[in-house]
Image (cartoon, rainbow, N blue to C red; front, side, top):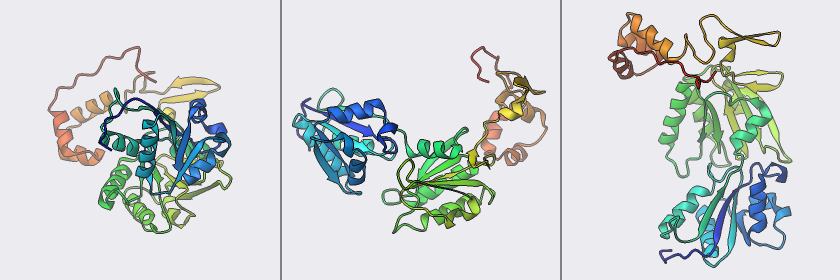
Length: 326
């Protein structure tokens, strides 16, 4: 693994998206077409079966990520073009990370050794969101509940932090045959900060033959059919479900009124600049409130140290520019 590398081959880390050929990017299909060898978890290989006739195919097991990366490196060093495939995006809980770890341990740099290309694909958070509506229109994050490589206290701290911060959250690897309690603990942590009625969507096998979509609530989330092929989308405090669609509003309704096809700015707002809820409006409000830093911290759910540092600085509103977004 520590031998000097020469630029003899290429590793293409290919994100397959949900798996169907029509949902792969053009570059993903081209990368597989130009590859001499295709390496991947057996399920991912099946997803691209129609694209790999006549190629060297190496199937690996679920927990053999490093073996896949080592195999790809060895074949690339032998002059092969290798497509190392991942479902979703190779850089989102995929093969890009383990592959770079193997490459760096082997002494690889971008200027020597085999060439590496990352071919992006739609991750589960994108594909599942597309099936249920528009749940990601506001700030969101993804957290894996797999504690095989990440200590549970680390995962729990992240869950608690994002639940408190009111992110829309996608839970990857929520449950397996052996890991059944993690989703219960995630629910327990979220219920500390979120309403039991918070909308939840569970998408299993998105865009695949056994696709299944279930809408539920945070209170009933753990009762749903959840497995390793599921992605759990937990809404924020403003997310709603209407006509079978899960939507997280961005906040346009509080800024604009749409009447007969016309957009009208509400009182107290300006196009391109928020007077009431933006940073300047909030700063002016806390500076003139007469309240203590402790009271303001409790009211706005922010660290008192942050409030104190803000109050210690003079209030200077930012000038509006033509580039300000609506």
